[in-house]
Amino acid sequence: LPLEERLKRRIIDGERNGLEADLDAALATGLAAMAVINDILLDGMKVVGELFGAGQMQLPFVLQSAEVMKSAVAYLEPHLEKADDGGKGRIVLATVKGDVHDIGKNLVDIILSNNGYEVVNIGIKQPINAILDAAEQNRADAIGMSGLLVKSTVIMKENLVEMATRGVAERWPVLLGGAALTRAYVEDDLRSMFPGQVHYARDAFEGLSLMDRVMA
Ligand code: B1M
Image (cartoon, rainbow, N blue to C red; front, side):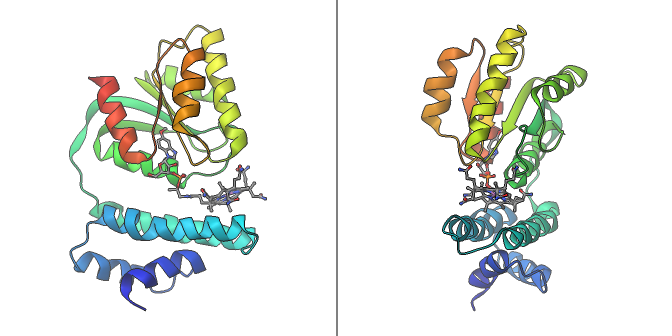
């Protein structure tokens, strides 16, 4: 198989053997590390999602694919462009309560960290209490919530309601992202009920440009 196809296959098949050599080979062709992630590896994850959704792939294999994806991102991380060294602002990032998906959240972490933000990544399955405590303790400038399950979109709404109830809606601009969200849900439904700022980020790069806007 050609290199790109082989790398994509590694994600789909959850095959780690030879991964690093293939990643090195991809970088040696002049591809940027981010392009390898976005244009090749994430394509593989997309196929994994489709196969799983269609009942053609069992969960343990999805997990293996996710592990290979994570290893690949970790291997590429030192090669990612680093524009800035922090100081642009601080964001608390979490995957919401009940949700374990963290590959997207961790990509957001990498992109923001490499572009001047300090990221306090508190992990997966985080209830709103933990998110707000972390934001308070770390004097965060913004809060980012990720979630991939449809039920996570409901949790995000509950989280915003809780922030409003506690009177902290205007304290932290909120960034929301994850595959189950839509722009319309965030910008029409959620925004109309939330007294503070709430933004939808389709991907990690939109997350970065939103942070740049929020902090300007
Ligand atoms: Co799960 N899973 N999964 N899964 N999984 C999905 C999400 C699903 C769509 C698959 C499918 O059915 N086709 C489906 C959800 C369906 C639904 O809710 N309607 C699903 C399901 C059902 C489940 C379980 C319930 C399965 C089960 O147990 N029966 C279970 C849930 C457990 C739980 O959370 N309580 C489960 C478990 C798992 C694994 C553990 C095996 C594994 C996760 C491993 C891990 O993350 N450590 C896994 C995986 C890998 C997937 C798929 C295949 C891939 C997700 C992924 O990593 N994508 C996924 C299919 C899909 O998404 N279509 C699926 C790559 C990643 C980079 O994309 O996170 O969307 P994503 O991030 C993007 C953007 O969304 C955005 O930036 C990134 C790109 O730059 N973004 C943000 C994300 N967060 C952001 C935050 C921001 C800004 C941008 O600011 C704060």
